Image (tube, rainbow, N blue to C red; front, side, top):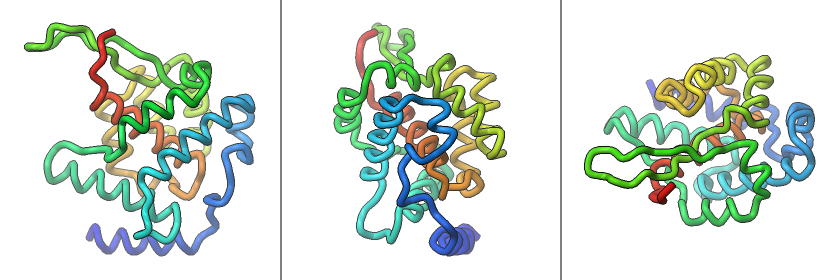
Length: 203
């Protein structure tokens, strides 16, 4: 069933109108929410994620996203865990290339308190509940029902939660992957989880 679904979605994504040749600066909501400098940084984030998940096996960017999301849910269903498959060192270098103000509109560092044998309080990257990115999710949810569900879970937890992971992993095909705004949400979602999985830094 999964294979049939994949084939149908792949056909849809490759045959329908796509924004894959556009940039975030052409999107109205992005322009209403972020300033020019922030949009430039968001494009760097999106470009980084695109380069990480794509290779020569896929004909276009939509296929890359479809395959990536399919691999995440397949992996999780089989093992109960997942690997974002993003190079964390490259991701850290990306942070240094974007303005601190942009970073802070998306993310915030929180305390990961000592647990079990770990005695140190570590940094834990989370979405910034009071940043522009949170406002963007709220507004985008008004036109995309799956983003609305994702944002509602975010409003309850004030950070990435198991329900947000489940929403993204299980219903990725309903998020309208062809939309650049959705690609940005997917990129930030999995980059945040990747940071949480790999960062080992004292607060």
